[in-house]
Length: 142
Length: 147
Image 1 (cartoon, rainbow over the protein chains, first blue to last red):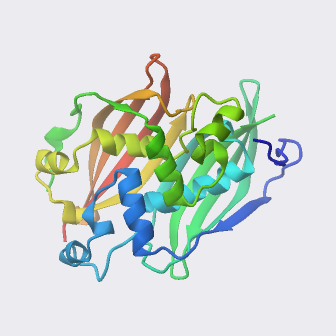
Image 2 (cartoon, rainbow over the protein chains, first blue to last red):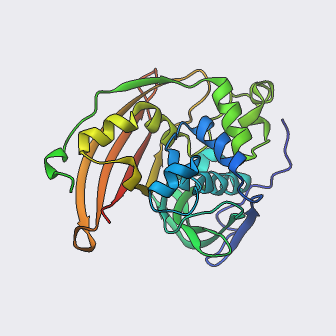
């Protein structure tokens, strides 16, 4: 499959640059049912409103890893997946039914180590109410 | 409160097959339509041995290998209190459909926060493929809300 993806290069990027952002469709109960089955994360808090209420919530909440999955799509739209060396996600707020997840990222550091060139990015996901993931990722570039 | 005696607990290793239908299903659930993630023929045409597992996939192997109910009873906790705090990945090699991945999971720390109203259970996880190559490592922070 040919794709007209222009690979970013180490020299073409600078600290402060933003990578192309992405926004998900609104998260529906159907989205969460599909993700429950596909991901294997069967915690009922994501699909069973009765269970969610017994946990003290008003409704089901999205899987944090669903939003991380959207971040992953944004990243692999930008660089090939093999460029990703490590990725740290901190889940900072809940994503609710109807929320769209906005993914964004910017370059915070460029460094060279052991003959390889690395870019460190800060990523985040946001809903209208809150920042839901704060992430840091390191990619290797030519 | 979760007993700190569980620090150092190693779960028995579990080997999980990476199935093509599952990666297709996962792509669908994430709205991922690119061929290397969703179309086996396109993945082969791109020179890959099979569908490529996306970067969040090691977490899914981790939960495949872990019986949540058994995990809760080990800790003496209930699922109602559980939230996902952090998920960190290190990548060493790709995972493809057809691989068989062995998941090794160890509880490496239990930390009290906010005067014990929150507890973090940290686990470190290693993913090794059928050729003995460590393809990824993850660190998971399970958050328990005690009130």
